[in-house]
Image (cartoon, rainbow, N blue to C red):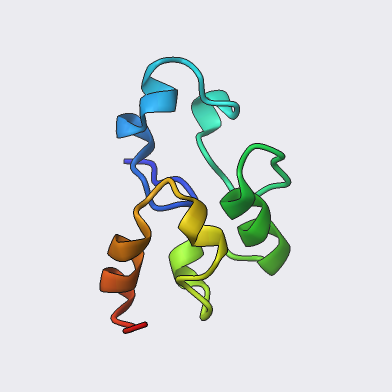
Amino acid sequence: MKIGVCGVACEKCPRRVSGGCPNGEDGCVPKENPFCKISTCAHNKGIELCFECPEFPCETTKEGPIGYGFCQYISGKDF
């Protein structure tokens, strides 16, 4: 199973399933991406998944696609 940089399973991502993924079969990988701030941020920080970042969750993750409350929950950080 391929996991996108945001943590969503690419096989279940609605954009990829509908054929609307801007990265095609590669799925969401860390790279400069004008449509995905999470992908660009991970690329700039040299990480594969936003969950690996010590700043997670952050302002960038508030923009989705995963609910920010869920990000807070899995990080174990109370805000």
